Image 1: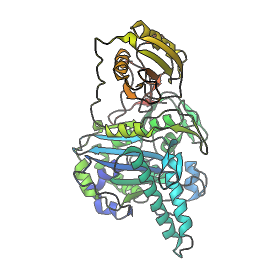
Image 2: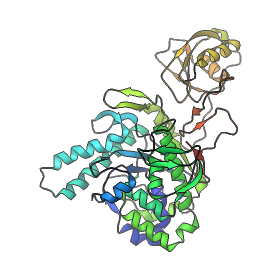
Image 3: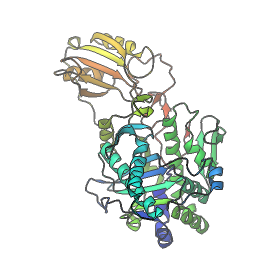
Image 4: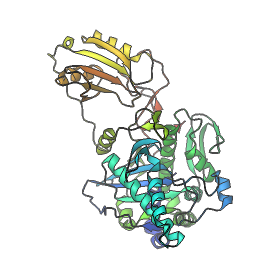
Length: 473
């Protein structure tokens, strides 16, 4: 629900800076000052969509607005951060990457709260701080804002630990802010593969391209019931909506319309919380030359989408090391795997294959193709769902692993102490499209941006960007 908050702010900052900044809520979160050239090579901004029934100043939203949004009462929602996006902008400011975190990602929560779904990081710390402040004698509004600050800090620390990135700035938007912002700019163009009807979110849309705003826009990004991939499809919805909003905000028609600018300022002022140290003027100047085609949208790598947890029910599996590598490599050309030695004797390598793709029988087919290429066949079996395929090897088995990955079309290779010395074990993730997949019709695989697409299909949809309207579930 965060939409293109940052682009919205920067789009109007240099024309109406005083009117905008006077109404914004600021929090001192002790973040690093990104400046023009941050030390780590990029500005990293955490965008947060808050499922709260209060405005940015802590005031309850009127019930008539909650009714229109199908958001329940003022006690519903809590402080779950149901949209989390890391906006990564390299020093040259020519390209930006918006990285989504599924709300149910199962990660280590900062502050000693243990492992839980990532959308609880804010609420855990906010509630703990509020309890400590209850007997302080401070007025309720002050307790509310101080406890919110604690929640934001804990969320930032959780994201930093997970990604390895240093968060330079923070922006938070609530339900009614999203509603008002989309109405102020005249709606966003989206496209659906099929018609949907969902009583939980209020989503009721035909198939095809359409323009949505207000409560319909909120329903579009909130729906997850009835979608083929549940929360992962909702992430894609949020990404294409943010792309559409970015495109709209970067168009001259919005920025030069005085009425729309005025409505946007009003919407932003009551809906957004920013960190205290953010120099909007400087940031606007850095971003002013960015175009829609220079923003792309991705999702952190995930594993099992139905991971059973001790306390939180079903969650989305996340491997922290994979997330850190993914974020570190944003904007970098992918490194090629080490080529195998052409003189290497493939028959000396016994290969086991584990099916983590969800496609029955795939492990056997892949093993057959490896044996046909000269490798010695080992055992096949199933493994927990994985998004990315990998070839793992035991001590001394790296050369054999490189020969296997090259035969399978190029896969990541890593050492694993659980694999016997000299052995190689292939894990087939949902991204696998190499030898052995011929004849599998399937229903598509899950790409890193959360979208469903067929492997190795030249007609597969391109990555989400702010240049066009892409149809989604």
